[in-house]
Length: 138
Image 1 (cartoon, rainbow, N blue to C red):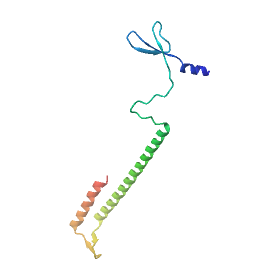
Image 2 (cartoon, rainbow, N blue to C red; image 1 turned 120 degrees about the vertical axis):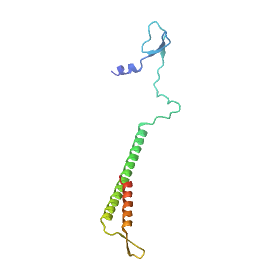
Image 3 (tube, one colour; image 1 turned 180 degrees about the horizontal axis):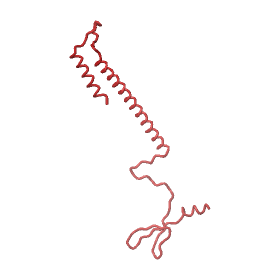
Image 4 (cartoon, one colour; image 1 turned 30 degrees about the horizontal axis):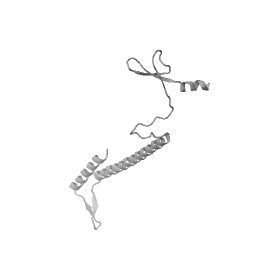
């Protein structure tokens, strides 16, 4: 049984050129034509010039794992940034709702006293916050 598997591996190969000048290869030489036996060599082919040695499966696996880890880290970073941005948007929207519903807005001065905003200052603050929300919250 083993011989049946080895015979094709050690079969002879013949080379010949036909009348049109085309080179042919085959397991049997053509009848009535000149042919020559081709020496078979079992070896790994030499890499083409300019090309490096192909990485083995271990190197490919390590490279795949490295890329997967980088992708996971990038994805986690993107999710964290998205979550942070969503939180900031929600805070700005809450602040806007409070500004619109409050009767009087004030800030504390250097002495710790309340300084109330005029209606015009309040409208300006609301417009600025609405602009910020429209730019950052999508």
